[in-house]
Figure 1 (tube, rainbow, N blue to C red):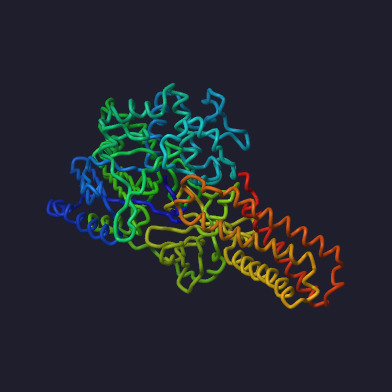
Figure 2 (figure 1 turned 90 degrees about the vertical axis):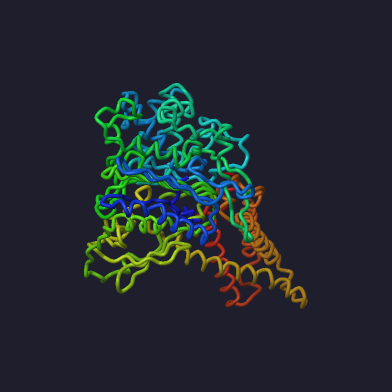
Length: 614
């Protein structure tokens, strides 16, 4: 499934390459395979990638499919052009192609509420204005994110309707106003296709996309059907100097990311979307519909690249590119089209937790093939950079459960400097963006576009090449530094509350008999226990995107236990007479400690850590 960071490790990992070949001469064309071998072999060695597959298509020029490394390491089975790789959120492109088929047939209107097409008991609630297929295609239905995306056991996979009912997300934005990447939205679109066509989504894409295009090694079914399953690559982690494949992964919102395909089959899909023949009667979509699909449908800011009909649009040095990335836990993929050159590319790897920055390699290949990199004109305006500085969170976020706290760890930091702005993304080197016009900064083709509220203050940032989300400036309560300070002060106060009554008991101080102090100590012990168990349970991305960790709901009861004990301690402190048995200074510092603990508990509530029922 696609993510902005995976970063949502927190990390954003996306493949996208832009390419193409003319005016490349024959000699250069013949050197492309050697160049690709050099790129991928060196990067796979450096970043410990078990296997990769690649295809490049250019109408009337050439088609290249290549693979490197292993699909099954233990068996020493090499990956090839017919090895199946999970393509993650690239699966959504088949959902959107199916939707455009129904539009072409007159059975679906992109601007009609999706509820109009739902015939069963499941319907979206009328929280805001109606959600349309256009909203789903552009990731603007307003849904919050959901992180429970995968399972290791295919026997627990729900039916599509069941998944939609049981995982209905909260709407946190008015539909059509704010892009926030949504796997649920893509799954809902697939369900609409089922309702209109009268057949399951898997059957629909088999009969109307894969069969006509002879994509015989592509499927959404989980587990993959026998022939495809035998050819499908294993997913790997590089650990302790070797590749291990600990389990298979299965996608819960299946149509949003469960497709398995090959370099050969994805080339056929590229060709289908890039054909411009006069007679397109044998294609999955007419030329007119393809032109509509690959046209701008939505942008949150006119200076940003925006969304086509399910594709992200990218303007790269005069080239219009339509692309999509795809990430599961193990597999990372990209699919892109350059319609002006009738060209496209697909790439996929089978290893988790790599630091292979696909964008850097994409630009390297592009520059090799085209040599057309252009410098962006910079502005001399370098004053007032601190107005833009601060922490920013993605609109792709969770609001209704304990995973809201992930935004603390995934926050982007922007800081001002003499030359421009530094963008700090967790796990990556800072990147310098220089001013090019008012409220717009650029680093090569990438732009940060800042927007202001009605008082003229910066309130969010739009990334030109990432149109599926925006970045909102974080408030004080969301600020990582503020939360760290509150946490440190709280832990010190709790430690003091635990140590003092024990110490006074040991020296036989009569104040050791103050009941409220022992209740405070117990309350603090519960908090220490909570943090120990909570962070040891959520100790990596795997514990977030797969099933909810065992005993987590029980662990999330602990903050409620602690705050009840704290309330009891406050009661007995008041009952005993504030300051009657201690000095004024001691009473003051006790009050300050209580006040900090109140702020701490309010922050726990803000991050939904009392919400153990969610």
